[in-house]
Amino acid sequence: MLKQKTSYIYRKKTGGKLWQKNYYEHVLRKDEDVKNVARYVLENPVRRKLADDFTNYPFSGSLVFDIKEL
Image (cartoon, rainbow, N blue to C red):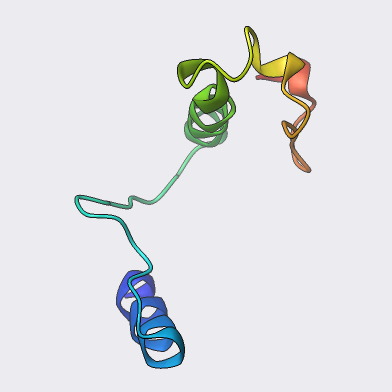
């Protein structure tokens, strides 16, 4: 429902697409799930070779977890 509603609003305002093809979402039920997803996101700059370690990427961080926990 969130994806559908945000897509509609964004498309109406901009005429563009908000979500990339093959995007999917799922509910994070446990803290461990949240940590795994946060870690995955933090590792994106490493996969793109923008940093050798996510802790060295200047735009990495979390408002919820200490970065050492991830």
